[in-house]
Image 1 (cartoon, rainbow, N blue to C red):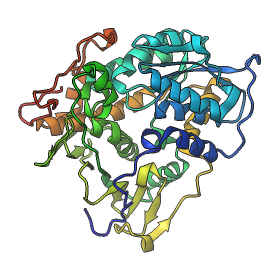
Image 2 (cartoon, rainbow, N blue to C red):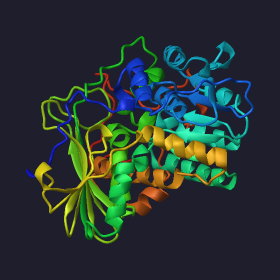
Image 3 (tube, rainbow, N blue to C red):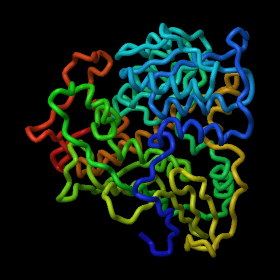
Length: 456
């Protein structure tokens, strides 16, 4: 890494707000970020917009609080769905404590199991909002059903763990467009006013022609322990989502998609090829499928390069940021844990004493801003469908992952046309289904070996 680069110095134990803070503390933190008091809601009001939460982990629970931090006509959570009862119960307790009577989810609207999403969405009226925050292996299934039922959608990143799933999401997004449904995705950095201000300057020529975009997410992973024999394998894999590819695509996919979305936003284009390297350290004891490190070089149609670097090894240099270099000067586009650390510099040196311009302080968190846009679109019938660009950024991330895992150069056309799916029968899974992938005698799941692995 360039010695002139200002590091975000992300501590190895730091994690993104939705993913990794404790739920109760996280909910309080999100509420505090809002610039106004949360208004009371009365379910009898005709203009109350109903929400159903599908996937009640910290990401989903946080999304509910983000939504209810937006001023305007009232919202009410009326249904919840999850595979695991303890997650639903914990989320419901925390949300009720935080939001009071804005949470109206009695026992008969708490749904468990692989088909619970259908029952929760069925509690909505056309025009209400389904919040899809399960792991991405289930996102195409849930999104298709929500669109078929005629409800608006907020769905978290990522959107599918494989190219076949991305194509399903794109097709459902087109169907949503035809129905005039409003669809928001969880790539919240696009709603960062600080980043938007820098994008405007770049489009005006302040950076010159972009030559290179660099993104880094280097932090520590705790190793995944082997499954205990008494634990059902399918449910155990779903509890370890980042480490099992069919569930959520792996850590590089799940954690780096924001940064690759920033890269594509900066370029206002999608990469045409990706190639990269990665591997596992000799002392790796992780039972999951992840590699320890990933380094991907993307090439855009005009020859511009984009670098995406991820590392999950303890006691190493930490970094969590995006930088962009043009023919005139360089800029920082984001900082630690998606912070709006945005600055334009005098030349190529991204250091504190060399700053030419910084944006105004953001008035609201992007996590709330994305809900402001969605709810405004619903209430005022404005077009709003983020599916295509978000799915494309996700596909670019899958390109990079595949390039590292296979040891081959992957093209955009290959990724877009691929029918590969880690779990082709994901729509029909039940708690009694066999697990889509199996561990070896030591309890370790198959990890990619370049030159032998296939995922396209």
